[in-house]
Image (cartoon, rainbow, N blue to C red; front, side, top):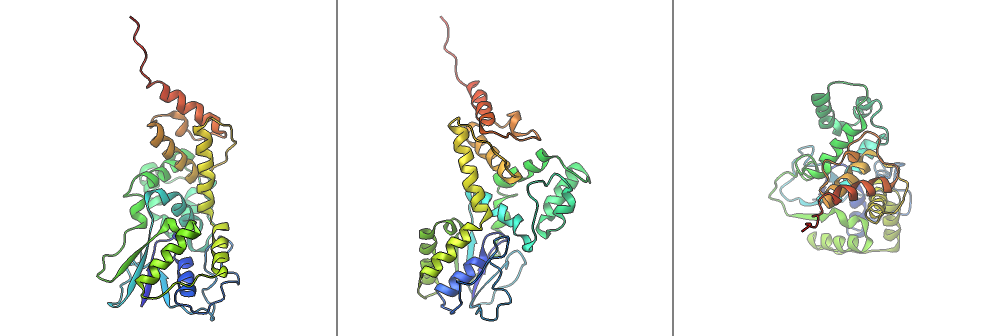
Length: 293
């Protein structure tokens, strides 16, 4: 059997359809609607015309065993993929719409709607007690730790069950460039001892995937914001909590400004110049001054 092992938000269902269509050639019509309103590739579920040759599930997360003859494709992200991974993990949790923009209001009620937020809730309650609302800075700091600390971040998306089966590690980053995506599919085909048959319909399927991918668009947006900050250009910004945490992470990586107050206040900056001026002023204090003889 062929199986895809992946963690929530890492596009296992999209990869399943792509492999079944373009490698296993199951004859499925990928020109019809494939994505739910939140961008998840779940419309194949319940479609009797869909033949599932390779099967994507959360095998490791749910501690499901593999058969001895299974070939396993794992979707593997890196630290640099976490903005996309965690954004989609929360926004596509079980096809439930999740309010990540205003999570500081009715926090526990919102988090309780998704099963994967248990650790998040436990940490909040343990550190701050049971409240209706939690400060935006508190929540931002939690996401910041997920983006920076492997144990609380990357490992949540890569704790794969050790197996003796043949395994191929599929690069998560390759989803976001069609050339890289096709390159990885060719390698999967070789791993499965099959061939890869790309079509224009597959290219359109990939284009639709990108157009509906919240995490991908969030990364594009945040990189533009970071560029404006680093170049001292004015740009009005309106970021969600994960995006704010990602910007903080990048600025701290660039400037080592861990104690910069503007990064930790509840009301986040609304223009890039606020952040740019703050970090460059902060860093200027590290410059050596010329000695006066």
